[in-house]
Length: 442
Image 1 (cartoon, helix red, strand yellow):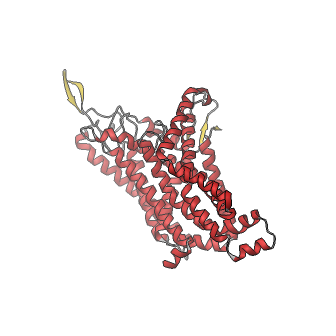
Image 2 (cartoon, helix red, strand yellow):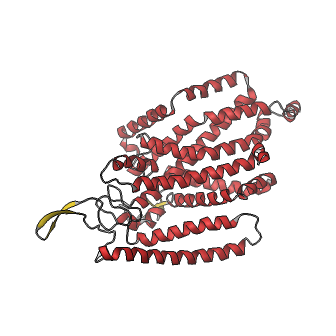
Image 3 (cartoon, one colour):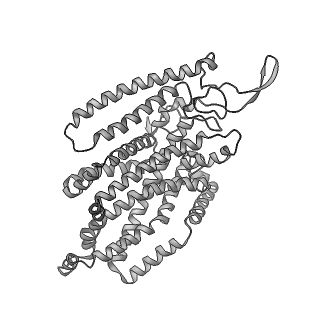
């Protein structure tokens, strides 16, 4: 086996590695550790953190790709693709409702020598049923009961393990255990029924909606994380330089972000994405596969989103840097001959990092929603890339059909709600722990 990671895969794993190193080094800072302890003392932060961790694990599985050199035609499939191979292979001809055994729309077929219009049987969903009209409900109930038994057994083992590991822990583990148990039961139910049915139905091309939704998680997290990495150095660097040096440097930086703020974000992003698409179409030799072209467009979208979203945080950092530069200890450092770089790196930046951290965590959900909106209007990720925005865009025609195909939009809504709500709740806990004014109010 040979690794075949895409550029976004390398960046995601680099972020994971940097986060692990930073977590280890954070132990040397008692005040920082105390603030993070206050974050996870809130039940909402524990529950939302667990949900976010589940999404991150799925995204990491989808960011681990390899090929078999002995099979030249083998694509660079991810670990998630290989784990969900049964869902990918169980492809129908067209739409089918969740847990259905017949197609969603009638077709003309031969029956007893006559042409009739009826709902044809699915090739995969309920194929094991001999008499589906009488066996379907009992089969679904039996499989659900098996999933419940397996899930409860796993929950019992997990509960005993957590009780032994965290007997005297001050953290609200019962809340996290309850949320984890619910997620585990849902996962067991989906795995058990996916062996015989399409749990969340299929789309217009017959692909499993559950598979599309799980693949869309990586796209959402890549947009949120990589756009944050673009925003952070721009906002922090330009904001600190403008606030500390003032004068003509401040004027130039203010003019720059004011100019960017005056341009409608959607128009700028649309122009940049369309320009990239024209470049890709005119130079197909730059990318070997369609997957690499889609990944390049995703990476470019993160870049242009970051360039249009850093202005708000830059203003905030600039104002805080202007306030800090007038404090006594900064003037004392300047009087002792400390260089401007030393003052910025040792005094200015560390004292405004709590603001940057809070803003970054709170902007994450905004970037995820921005991808959905941009893909909905056709200037987001590549249409061949699985994302929540592409699912919502496809649901426009489905909602106008008769009968209404409702499960694609519903699935995208539920998954996005879980991701964005968890990010918002976690960001609220981070704000309360790291912002002294919010902590004093609480």
